Every structure is written in structure tokens, then in C-alpha cells.
Image (cartoon, rainbow over all chains, first blue to last red; front, top):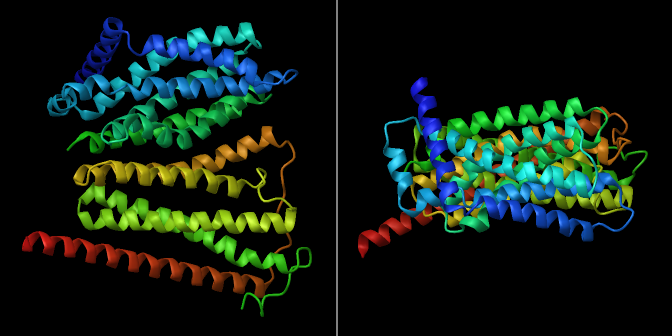
Length: 213
Length: 203
């Protein structure tokens, strides 16, 4: 078990170190989420309530995650590193877990900028809304890193990932928006937790089949 | 039987007859998706190209019946509520989500090179589909709480015996149709594969 965790942490640290050196995903995500929030101001007619703005925040989060995920496996596929990882004597699901944690890390940094910006520009957020964002971020990173590995095996790559991920992200958006605007937010947070558990287990168990030749 | 035996609905009259097509088609689509996922699970477990073709064919049929569900649902909605589309109908929204999901299945499948890896990727995606059905169902239930505070209640009058019998016959007929189409498509695909093998052997 310690070996498994060591593998996961080594792979996650590798992703963060690559990002710190190359800086090709995170700045793009930050700039994208800020630009999206500014565009939303002009997309919303005047006098639209805060609830509508909150819904658009979710669109921004989902698309920022997509932006990060579309490059998630790029370092691995460029130099054939994924084949090396698959051949390495570690559990293959460790590769998925490490990529999920790295994606979650990037997304969390983007949200660390996006949520205060949203609160400043539109409306303040309460604790339940932030908990919803955290739970949904985990779900979207877990499902997204698996689907992104699928998309990396296809010819479509960046084109095909949104098609795969958007239908699966609908329950997350429902849970996240509900947690933010509904008075009984606990129900929605529970639902998000359930989604995370179901799809994390499914991705964890099936990742091996996606990457092996 | 649907038109001659089953009594007409007191509220909706003749337009209620589409119930005998819409609901069996929807249930058949679920059956096809379930079968596709079951074959996908068997594929991951045991391997074998045969199961890949079966899983793909089942999902193909499921998508066709899913599209038919959306069309018949829209016609029924027009006839009884006066609009072509209603976000209040949870089942229809669920079918829209599933339809999008399974359309992406075909996009994925046709952009991955043929081979064992494509079989496994398709199978994993098909398994995600059956997990998505109940999760989306709950999500749409939850969403209708904040999108439509008043729940759209469509629980019409209870079915009488003859109505239920007509419904079962209609469901059986549609399931049989789906099964026949499934077999025909599989036989066609196998013939194609044989033909390709023969051509390769000859050239």
C-alpha cells in the first residue's frame, strides 16, 4: 500500500514539476476563467439575478477544467512516456490517480482565482457553494482524466474530449448549482459525493483497460 | 390491439395511443443500452472480438430507439401539452442526455484505430453509460426542484386491465423488433468481416 501511495505521489509531483517548468497549462486556465467571467457580464442582460450569474460560473468551471484536461496527457504522449509508465512495475490505476490529483490541483488553483473574482464582480458565495465546487472539481478531474486518456488514443483528441465529458458533467453541474442556490444544499452535496464515489471507483477500476495496448 | 382493443383515455382521447409506442420504445432502448454494457463487461472480463461487435450493435440499436423515444415523446408533448419540448418531463430530458452521451460513443469509436484497444475503450465507455443512467435520472429529478418548483405531475389515471395488456403486447412487439434488428445487423457485420478476411486471403 505504501508502495502504491509512493508511486502516486511521485507521479503527481512529476506533473506539478513539469507545469512549474513549462507553464503551458495553468496560466492558460487562469486567463481563460477570468476572461470567461468578464464575457458573462456582457452575456447577461441587465437586471438578471445572481442565480443566473452563478449558473454561468459553473459553465466557466466546466470549460476551464476541459481546457486543462485537453492537455493533461500531452507530456506523456509526446515522447512515448505513457508506454514506459504502463510497462513500469506499478499498478496502472496509480497513473490515473496521480493524473486526477494533478488535474485537481490545477483546477483548484484556477478556482482559487475564479471564486474570489466571482464574489467581487457578481455576488458573494457561501460555504455550501464552495463545498459544491470542491466536490464537483474532484468528480470532473476523476472522470476527465480517464476520458482524456481515451481521447488521447483517438485521432480527434482535443475535439472529442468535450463531446465525451459534457454529458457526464451534467449531474455535476446540477449538484453544484443546486448546492449554491437551493436552501437545502445538503441534498445536493450528498448527491455530488455519491457521483464522485461511483465514477471514481469506475474510473479507477477501468483505467488499466484504456491505456494498455 | 392498441387501436381496437385498448379503451380510449378519458382525458387525452386518441393522442394517448402514442403511449403504447413511446413507453415500450423507451424501455427497449434501456434494454439495448443494458445489453450493450453487459456485453462490454463480458468483453473486459473474457475478451473476444465477437462481444465487441455485439456490444456495439446493441448500443447502436439503443441509440436508434432512443432517437425514436425523443421523436414520439415530442409528438406526445405537442398533442397533450401543446409544446414540442418540455423540460418538465424528466424522462425525456434523461433521454436527451443519454442520446448525446451515446452519440459521443460513436464519435469516439470511429476515431480510434481498430484493434483490441478500441474494443476496450468502447467497452469502458459503454459501462460509464449504464452508470450514468441512474445518476442522471437523480440529477434531473434534483434539477427540476430548482428549475421548476412545481413538479409536473403526469401520473394519469391508473391503467385498466385491457390497457395494461395492450401495453404489454406493444412492449413485446417492440422488443422483438429490436432483437430482430440486432440480429440482422450482427449477421451483416459478420458477413462483412468474413468477406474482408476472404479478400485479404485472396490478394
